[in-house]
Image (cartoon, rainbow, N blue to C red; front, side):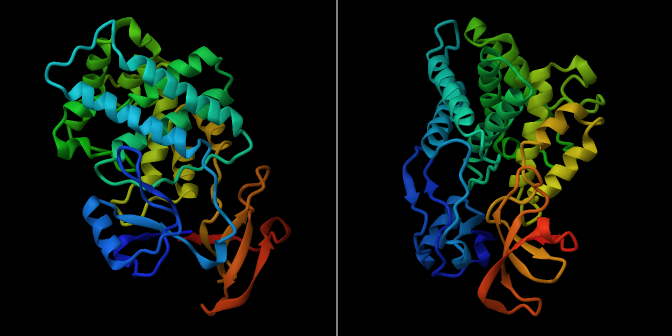
Amino acid sequence: MRLLMIDQLVAGSRLGKTLYAEDGRVLLHRGTELTGAYLEALSKMGYRALYVLDPHSDDLQARDPISERTRQEAITAVRDVFRQVREPNRSLDQEWTSRRILYNTAVGILHDLQANRDLNLQVAELRTLSSYTFDHSVNVCVLGLALGERIGLPYGKLADLAMGLLLHDIGKTAMPGECAELHEGAEQLVDETYRQHPRIGFDIVQQLGKTLSSPSRIVVLQHHERWDGSGFPKALKGDEIHLFGQIAAIANTYDNLIHDLSAGRPTPPHQAMEYLMAAGGSHFNHALVVEFLKLLVPFPLEAAVKLSTAEEGLVVSIDRGLPMRPTIRVTMDPDGKERRRPYELDLKKHPDITIVQTF
């Protein structure tokens, strides 16, 4: 697959990932031919980029660490909770009916992760501006849970962590639309209204009483705190930040980076990983960053890359023991001509060849 901005696509390309409506219905299946009418409709719906099939990777399909069913159920659960909170006469008390749905969603994500420990942690779904917060909430849950499990948190704490991660951006429900659509990438946000959403969210979940644990609520309050005290809303430092808040900060930042289209294209995973490593010890707990990076792959399956030989190709295999040296299916010669017979190059066996660019 290749990720292309929607204005770069031409009619006749085939969709690389199934698209879903907000209610979980399938909009277009993987492999659907993208006609001009489809591209126009998707653009109006808010899609800024799409994955399209590459003829050289028809035999490949990266697997998500959670199933499509689990993901869609989770997105629906988060959307419904956020909409409930927006209701003017809402009642968020001890009888909060959404708790069971949210808990079942959290457990479903946890079970999928535990069943797919052999998979590389890749998260590359498509988002519109209207669905960004819901998709992002689920991704942050997946990423943060994987980190929590890696550092040995017991099952009960993982469930509490998951519920907090799913709700971490609930404060955005009380913000103006233009502020709610903001998210933090590598650049420091200065919008003061945006900086209030963790505290607003915490005030909302405080109304849930014992139906949501204290550690779950702390995630909502502290997911923008930073290890060096430069975060918000309280400018906490080091271990003043709850472990769950530290985990949420890392997962939240990574997902925002790899889905940020403000610069025209999202940050490639290897650059997002470099950003986190550089910020370990300043913005983030260094030890947690090290463990988190062990879960990720810098060059995901199907990523399009350019080699130091000037050849281009696709990542077709990853060695978890040496993820910087994947196997590449070389499809383009150094002169830019497409190879009639692509070949596979295992970079572990060719230390003199490196990946110099991703597309």
